[in-house]
Length: 361
Ligand SMILES: [Zn+2]
Figure 1 (cartoon, rainbow, N blue to C red):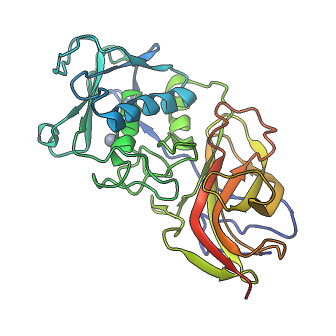
Figure 2: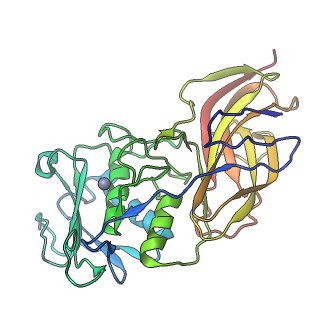
Figure 3: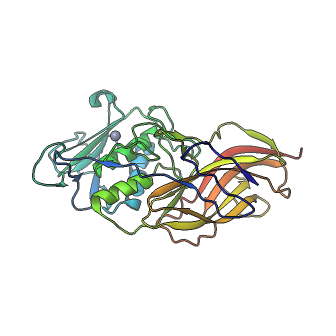
């Protein structure tokens, strides 16, 4: 096995000799919080942040957008020191979104009503000085109803383009970040302004807040204990840009060639974590543990990521001769023996490419 060195300060040369430990590039935190005029955070000073869904736009008649709402709440609740909860619709048939009713509402609306934007979140106490930092009282979110709310593929980052698969899901996640008090910061995160927002590896691939968001919440609300690693098929490539893993095309290769894999581990938690990882090929899109269906390319131990940081690796792997020729899906799994007890155990395996044709040539 050899490794590919990227000529960038963002990438530390990976060391991969046999199954030696890998060290990843560790990204600096990128977060910001919304401020009062005195620079204090605009925040909700006690939980839960209860999200009241608008009955006219987030209802069972629109399953993808309703699912987006529930999954976004779950994703934030997984990492937030402040509980984030779904709230019952208060008045069935009430299509209004009201500021001043003390309900934190989420609704889908016509784009023209929010100035052509994908999403808009409003609250009070922004750039005004009423007392000190603290509860904003109420926040409301409007998301354009012409977006794509389908489940996105793990292998691609999401853009601001409303037609991108999952763009609507990401917009709801992003706007709830604003509700929690986070402002825009360009990094490997969901609060960036649109330089590509990465996905994390959950079974159903919902967008999830990343390490930067965890660091931002820590700065606003103080420390809390959280252990969770997330695999991602994307990586930070500098200048606030997120890259996909060039996985869109079918890869046809000989077993003697090197396979380039570009992958990321996000540590949402507050502890430096050392973990093992596996790169493997599977004949199935959902890995089947049978040794006749899944084949390990490499295992290693000793990878680590700092608290509330991300690490990216870009590595060329040799293919073990014992792997039969065939057409495969490529996967990256972290903590492959489930030795680490995590807040979410369903976000450790990510598909990296959907079609690798391995040939005996
Ligand atoms: Zn925003």
